[in-house]
Structures are given as structure tokens and as C-alpha cells.
Amino acid sequence: MDAEELAGRLVAGGFVMADEPTDADTILVNTCGFIDAAKKDSIDQILAAAELRQADGVKHVVVAGCLAERYGAELAAELPEADAVLGFDDYPEIAERLRRIASGGTVTAHQPQDRRGLLPISPASRQRTLPDPALPEPGYRKVVRSRLDNSPSAALKIASGCDRRCAFCAIPAFRGAYLSKPPADVVAEARWLVDQGVKEVLLVSENSTSYGKDLPGVQPAQLLAELSHVDGLEWIRMTYLQPAELRPALIDAICGTEHVLPYFDLPFQHAAAPVLRRMRRFGDAESFLELLESIRSRNLAAGIRTNVIVGFPGETESDLEELAEFLTAARLDAIGVFGYSNEEGTEGYSLDGQLDADEIAGRVEWITSLVDELMAQRAEDRIAQLVPILVEGADLGRAAQQGPSDGITRIEYGADAKPARRRRMLVPGDLVLGKVVANDGVDLVAELTEG
Image 1 (cartoon, rainbow, N blue to C red):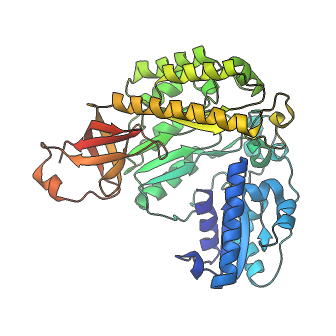
Image 2 (image 1 turned 135 degrees about the horizontal axis):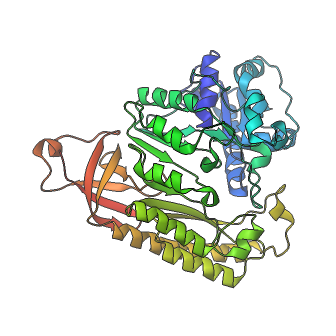
């Protein structure tokens, strides 16, 4: 999505997107700088782009995104393969920056700073200041974005930054304080996406439950209500809901607003209270299970996913057992398991009780094998349910409880499907109803039941 915003600014500035990297004069690599694995992947992409410059005539390689923002001049010094490293402050003038580079000029890489200090501490005061340059200006109704694929699903950023201080996370320092995109801007972008053929939007931010905290009188439920009236928008999926901030009113809105999917992306991160406190997070296994029960009391079929981090400094074997017991009891549809990455600039970086890489890898392997079994069991629980499915490819799609990384649904044609339906090839963007008849691990198999 950030890449599409950059593409939109470049197109507005007179650039033309190439169909293939080898057709381009300049390659702009949009990087991630969250954890070591993502940073390594970003570096690999930069080096691959540099190889194209040597072999295929690409003239310039420019680096942008979170890795560029987080390391700035240091990254530029260590990666001479890149012609420029651009931070967030370069985004409003990205076309001018690339034009200067293409003409043989240079752009000085920035010295990174803690972006949390760029906005007032009080959320209510933030919209009266200059916004994060990575976001459109408040009140900016024209959508500056170019789609880079034709998927029927698209991410829609509703905010940038984060006010929380999780001990494992460096994002607030380089993304800045929390800043909501005004509802009218979100709705305008949703309408634009529908015009591009999108049927599902995924509302994304670092912490979506905080949406509106800096906009007087605005609540997340209000945004969902406004989006539900966008003609042609069939599915609205809210992602990254902070468990400690999820209130009954928002649960009600997610479960009861037309076109909003009963889907809860809840990054618990752990379940043992001592580990969570060291992570600077709230909750424990008991309170998390109560939250899940509250959701299922409203919609028993709600889709629920989480992420967990294992190997955090000080995590004991007892803590890990408690996490395993919680995951077993929680009956979640999708679970992402991550080994702790010791990120400089975070509180966790200097904590005692650091575990070695082999120990962390062993814990990841154990929890991953457990959750693979648990997710397959949960998928099996879905057998005989009727589920709405968004078609994404040839007889492939996702059920309402499946987010983009939560597995797929293979579509088959049941005996009661109308002959016309059996003759017609499904196309991406179709919404159909299917009965789950089997599962393959986390993936579902559903028979089409209506024409």
C-alpha cells in the first residue's frame, strides 16, 4: 500500500510505471525495517535491483520505505549500490527527487531521528500541526495512489504511527506518533478503490483500535459505519486490533455493521503475564480467553487470528507452556509464530535474560508445530458451515473468516449448484456462497451452493 502511494505521487509527477523491472530506467525499492528478517529481505531486493542495473540497462536504484527512514545516511554509506536513500520527508517531493537523480544529481540521505517528537504528546493537538509526510494532508480528498495489481482486495491505511511503547518494537521511533487519517479521506479512498475493481478493503494501521483518538468525536465504529455505505464495497476487514484497547462498542460494530466482516486480528504476542509485562503489554491468558468468549457470544463463527513472539528475554519454559495452553484453548483460525528479534533502539535490546538463537529457533519450531495442528483442527470445525467466499483466482478464494495470510478456500461445484453456475468460470471479485466440506490443514474446501 505504501508502494502504491509512492507510485501515485510519481505518476502525478509525470513518471510512467514500467511493466517489468528490466523495462525501467529507475527502480524504486520500498523497504521494510521492522525485524532482522525483513531488513535482510529488503537488502536482498536492493542488491537484486543493482544487478539489473549492471545486466539489463537499469540506470538508477533508489531506496525508500521504513529501512531507509530508520537508517538513512548509515544505510546509504553501507549500500553504495543504491543511488539514493530517501526518507519519509522526501515523499511529498518524490517525483522531483527522482527527476534530480535521473539527471545525474544527488540527494543527501537524512540523519534518522525519533519521529515521535514531531507531533504533540496530546493526540487532540496533532491535527493542528503538519502531518506525517507519509500521509496525505488532512482534508486532502484527491486520492494519490496507483494500483500495482488487479486483486479484488486492497489495503487502505487509516492511520500512521503508534503511541504504544512495546519493548520489542522499533516502529514508533521511525513511524512517529499516532495520526489518524480523517474519515472523509478514508471514505474517498475506498470509493476510488471500488472504481478500480476492489471488492474488499483491509483497514490497516499500526494500531487500528486507536483510530480517531486524535480526531474529536471520531470513533472506529463511526468509520466502519461510513464505509459500509460506499456503493460496491462488499467486504470491510479491520486489521491489527490491540487487545487491551478493544472495547465492547467496537466488537458490536464489527459484528453488526453491514459489509463489515466478523473478523478479529488480535496480536496477543504472548499469554504469560510476566512476559507480557516485560514486553510493556497488558493482559494474560485468562483475560484473553474472556475477550474471545465476548466476541463469540456475538458471532460464534467469527474469524480470529493472532501473532505470538517466542523467545523474548526472560521467557521461561513455564511461560512457553502457558502460551501453548492458551493457544490450545483459544481455538484460533490463524496464528503467526515469530522468534524474538533483538532490535536496536528498543527497550528489549538491553534487557537481561537474552536467549541464544538456537534456543529461540527451537521454541519457534515447537510452537509452530503445535499451531499447525491447532489451525487444522479449527478449520475442521468449519466443516458443514455456509461461508461467503471472495473469488481470487481459478476456483480459489478466501472465506469471510480468512484474511490474506490466513489460508485459502478451494471452490468445488456441489450437486445442487445451478447448471449455469457450473458452466461459468468464476472470476476474481465474484462473491459466492459455499458449504465447507473438507479442509487441508488451514485451507478449506467448499462446494458452491448457489447460482
